[in-house]
Amino acid sequence: MSMNPADTSTWLPLDGLAPGFDANKEPHTTALAGRRIDVTAPNGTRISHVFAENDVTWTYAPGEGDDTAAASDTDAYEAIEVDEELFYVQFHHNYKPNEAVSLILDLRAGRVLSIISEILPTAEKGRTRVQHRFGTATIDGIEATGSDFAPTTALIGRRVEWVYSEIHAYEHVYLSERWYTWQCLAGPERGLADTDENSVWEIRPGIYMFAWREKVIPCASITVADHRDITRIRSHGVLFGLDETGEIPTHFTFGAWGRLISMTGHAPELEPANFGA
Image 1 (cartoon, rainbow, N blue to C red):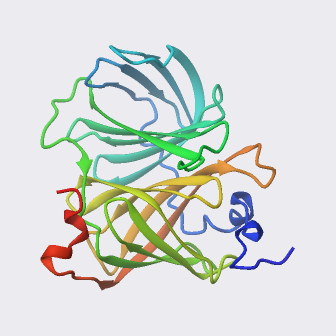
Image 2: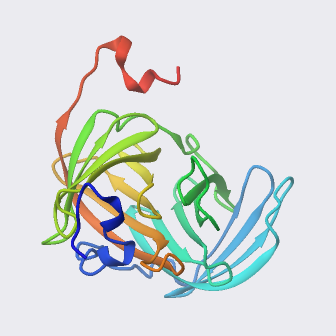
C-alpha cells in the first residue's frame, strides 16, 4: 500500500519507522552497574532500583494515596549519561507490557523525574492512545539540592532540525506549552507533518525533557535534549506504542543531532508562553 500524506490511514505504523532510525543513538552505558538507587516521592512512594550491566531489578512500595499495587520485577534497561552524573534510563515492563518507564536521574542534585508511558486499552475520545504520567522524587542518601524538576516554556518559539540517521530527518516547531509541529524532511515519512501534544520539563540549565504524544499513530516519546550548544543539540529518546497489528507493544530507543534553525518572536501580548498566565 503506497502512502498518501493526506490519508492518515496509510501512514507508517511505529514498527515501520524503526529500521535504521537508531543510527545516531548513544551507546548504552554500564556506569550504573553494581549500584542501588532508591527514590522516594513526595507522597512516600518508594522505588528501589538495583542495576546490573543490562538488567535492573526494581521494587515498588506505594505511598499515601497511591493506588498502584506493590510489585517487584527485573527488566532489561538502557542508560545514557547525558551530562556529568545525569543519567537517562529506559525500560519496558515485563509484568505490564502496556507500560514503559523513563527515569532521569540527577545523582549530583539527588533528584529524579519519572515518566510512565501507558498504552490505554482502547482509544478514548479526546485522548491520545499513549499517555504519560510525570512524577518527581528524591534519591535516598543524597542531599537534594537546587530546584525540583518542573515544566518550562523555554523551548517555545524554537525551530530545530533533527537528524536521526543518514536517511531520517525531521524538524520540530515548538508552538506553546501544549503543542508542537513536526515535519519529516527525509526518510520513509518524508512530506508528512502534524501538530501533536507535548510536555517540556527543565532538567538542568539548557537540558530539557521533551515528550510528545501522537494522535494518528498510537505512540509517544520521551526524549532528553541538551540545547546548551544550539549548533550541536544532542537528543536521546524512546518511542513506545503499538505495532502494525494494533495489538503488540513496540519499544525502541534512538538518538539525534540537532541545530536551531530559527526563533519566532511574538508581540508580548500574543506570546504563547503566557497562555496559562
